[in-house]
Image (cartoon, rainbow over all chains, first blue to last red; front, side, top):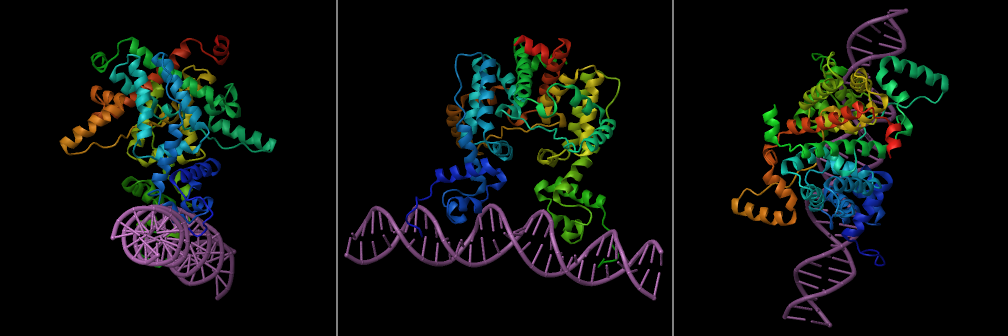
Length: 226
Length: 226
DNA sequence: GTTGACATGTGTACAGCGTAAACCTACGCT
DNA sequence: AGCGTAGGTTTACGCTGTACACATGTCAAC
């Protein structure tokens, strides 16, 4: 306590600062040193309240997951699940680093487990079998968090128009299908509506689960048909 | 050339060593220093053949992606796509680090673009519209690589039987749906068949795309119905 | 009122990372 | 013969997480 005039550190303030830092500069920017700077404190001071960087990220993620509003009741399992996932999406969207955080966690925290539990409960309440819930959770995989990795970051096109036309031409020869999609699809390229794409894929999955449910699908049935 | 008796370094040998290292100890273990050790060379020597760590990982990933067998022709778009994704899965399975590598790439390399192109070409050949191909690619997102992140690493149960029963009991109170699924679902828990889960979800998506295709779905139609 | 324990912040230090810059040396070409 | 260059080495810088020893302010117990 070299400077007596300042609030003592506590876990909440640390997580606050870490989240703010990550919001601005990404998860990688959350280093113990920078965090110390932000809190006007030695890096090592943080260790008195948090066991290490990993646990800190756990805490950050916990805060975001805890901010996901609780499930609405009264809807069908399908609407309920859809709503829950999109709600999670909204909550995680303002924290782009949450993706990276989730994907690097090795164990689900209580908060995370609670979210997963609520998602499954929604399906169980709708009468889905344990097997189907299990499959659905796998099918949703990361999508249940309201996001997916977009794996299509194609190289940027050159600014210069003639250079650009030239690049597109050779590109079209090598990757005809990509160019065909990019030029023909209404929402492809820069104007791609991420939310619509997400909802489309989510509905695809929910439709499928619904259908399996209506058909009385079960592992035994599937095995018998095979 | 301090030790004249050794093969000169080249890009291939470097990537070989890096892949071997990652196969054994994971992507994080691929550091320039360890790589240098493996090749019996100074860390900086690697930089004469590769611009940096990121480019090295690109090259590693390229090698794996290039090992994905080419598309079979003659099948329906659905079977073709399914086959292609499962083939990619088989190729990437032996390199667990490939997941991490893919997800941290910021730009698709030519090899990666070629794979994506081939996937889209399969769908185009089956008569799918550009819009539907676009949606399908988004829906498949990371699954098109043959993997998904599993986001359900629940804490390990204690070994001691009585301790275990106790833990399960309190767990069941807090997370009833999780326990219900884990105890009731045939394939849940340790015996969960990852391949079957993956195929199930993949088929869900392909079914959905097929249905949209058969229904003559298009953004205009979807907008009109809304 | 003094003393000692404890919680909290500081300072220093270490091992590891990616990589920039300078250097050294042997080979191939003119 | 000489010289450019490709390919290796050496050294060094700034960054990372964090272990460990130390200082100090607060509070409990005697």
